[in-house]
Length: 86
Image (tube, rainbow, N blue to C red):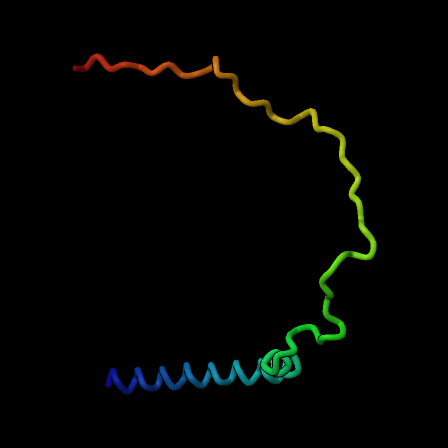
């Protein structure tokens, strides 16, 4: 009885998996098939090309922040406490 229930559950899971795969193929058929063929997400003509950038974009520098936290000084160290229980 348990084996029959396990077989039915396995069949249900396999059917659900096949349904999901078919739904994905129906929605993204062109993208999936082009990726399987080897074109990828970008066709060769519209793909980003390597090399130098035609126009360099420079970022403006921000002023220095004055509210940055400062590191603790070495003088403010915790003194180790010795135990006299021995």
